[in-house]
Length: 350
Image (cartoon, rainbow, N blue to C red; front, top):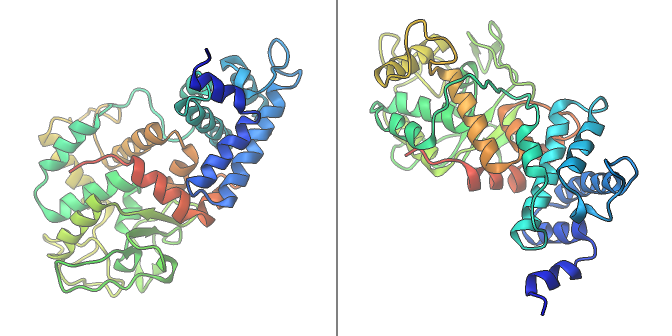
């Protein structure tokens, strides 16, 4: 007698339509569903064509690792590496979901995705730190400013210059423990608990009434979710934040010799180096492969969030990397796709 799982497999005539319908039930937007369908149907057409190794297969259900590899290879030359990685993540998510619901036996794209030549901030020689070890590191930072700076870097993946250029108007969240009232910029309307990372600030350019000493390398402005952990730490910092010397209202200000001045990249690097050295993660002459620096936190964010989500498109959006033919999916569908993926998968550090 056939099992219920076997019966369900036989009943699914169109696996892609089944997957997309479930995504609609899960609240995915029509724009996201249409983008996934376009890529999945192209994948389906490929594996059912004569281009596949050993000849065509009847449907994606019958496709294996080699068919998936051949499809990825077929995209090279026509698309950017980041776009290919994004499309591969769509197919990976399709197989992963269908495997979890018992419709497929395995996910042939899983190994292909892991072994793909990833173009976003990878360095196999770099020190690898687990989430529990990073959590212990964060716990050893008592000062509210330093704790907020480190956690912002770890939870958002922003660059040092981008963190220094943040103003109060770039933050949208309730502040309950102090008398401060945030007035977020218009780009954050309807996007509570969010951080706006602009692409405009350039060293020497005046932005929001202040000449900047650092540049944002982000190609397009990005809205990044602020989860409960980061919100709590930022609120602790705002409760003791001194008055700013700048009319721009910088988010992070010096509490030492340059009291009330915007933090500069050198301040952040010294701050992180000091804590990393105390923890045994920094050695003079150690180099990028050994030492933990502010840029390492961007690597940590990319690696752990990408591995947890399997969604390179969302991670690329959060990092500010642009794949022109997919980025609008995340820009227009921010509240549905980016926040949901981020909140479900971001690691806990407190």
